[in-house]
Image (tube, rainbow, N blue to C red; front, side, top):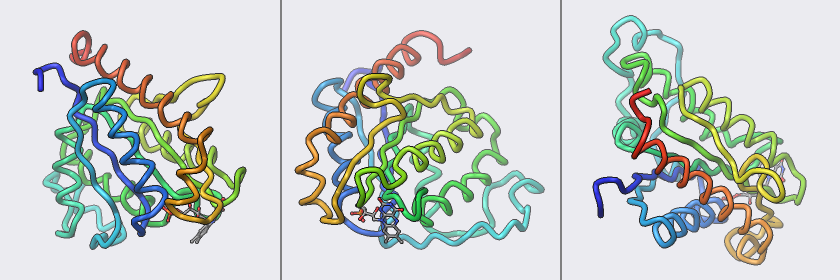
Length: 208
Ligand SMILES: Cc1cc2nc3c(=O)[nH]c(=O)nc-3n(C[C@H](O)[C@H](O)[C@H](O)COP(=O)(O)O)c2cc1C
């Protein structure tokens, strides 16, 4: 792996090994095959992930979160990554509760170092049981997380992947999503843009 290889971290916000996990892994596979990316993966399935309790220990002490659970592994992976692809199942028109908790807990990471995630690049994908079940609203929540943490949000752009990956599982888990060929195209478009932007920043302008 060359020193300019982009390190991309895929995060699955589903509590199951099903359609979202498949989509995130498919995105990582594409990033490796087409762009020679170095990949890492973190699933929220079976993780001990406590809610943020707003104790403000992280902002007072600036030494990370007081809760010592599986977020510690995630913080480490996030700091090492150049780029993120975060996937979520659509739950009630937005991201999963697990992913929202993950986002809230990242407050401790940036309280310790406000630039911990600065100028990394991020994209999202959302998998709904319905074709139009709130995928774009869920993506906007992922983009809000990026914006709030100095991560540069991106997507596959107009004519196909406007806000990122939008997928339809028909509530059939992995088997459902494998049949969503249009949805899979939105992942490839999104990863292409994410990787090209990340490579540009890695070679050129990270120290802006
Ligand atoms: C609590 C809950 C809420 C859901 N809400 C929505 C929804 O608002 N829109 C939608 O399209 N699908 C909804 N679904 C269906 C899931 O998004 C869908 O089955 C998805 O593929 C699950 O991802 P997974 O296979 O990675 O678990 C919901 C499922 C659950 C469990």
